Length: 340
Image (cartoon, rainbow, N blue to C red):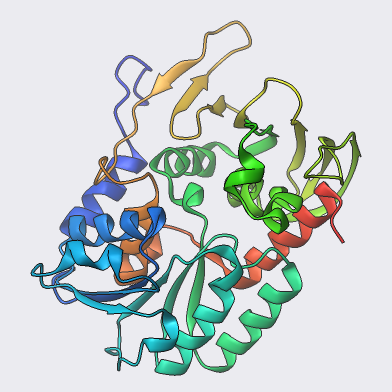
């Protein structure tokens, strides 16, 4: 008998949290390249999992001072100074600025790393991701793009519901909350391809649930001083799983990121993306579904991705984004946002 909404408890997300909690990570090892905001989140994830062997590589020595005496091995001077011999199952986590992600991945592969978790988007250009994927495949490297929204407990909850009920359609919004100081905060090249640098977070979640686009068409209009290819983006298509979808973004208005998935039984809304709301009829209200996380103090999706890369049982339960899939998603983004 299905529980009522009042009786609902965390389902798939709780099962995933329990699976991670029961897995043994005490024989694991990982190297983090880059210890900025995301690098510190990966470190928090490794500590939450109890991974004992951790190495951090940073271009600047200043951030490494905080890890003296903690048992963490530190290397300053950047990826060029890293000359370690990784263990057979050691995970390489690459959290450098976007412009150096691909080069850092090639460097770790040349050192012998055969498991890589590379920060999104790997590259601002799909052709470079394809090239890197081919190179790493030739070396026998298991490389994943760290689109952490795909590993959100909320997304995992919806994925399980959709598997039971069958997705009939999907809509998502990609409106960015633009701030006036962005030209001072981000490189001009990233801003000019902001749809790849940032908005693909939403696309990765939506198409992680329904499959990559098989056919689509879209329109764009307007422009921003730092984003000349457009400011309004609308379109629709059908996924490789034959699921119709539609997207909308208006960077000059007041929307926000969201994903809605519709099934034969109910509709699910992720807005904010960390939360899930369910609607069971056209006249019903949106009702929150409980979502459980193994380590809620860590940025959502990070500990789940790291656990999946370190333990095969977690990996079997949690789909991640391969470099080939990341390249396909980026090609779609290049079309949606009008990039060459």
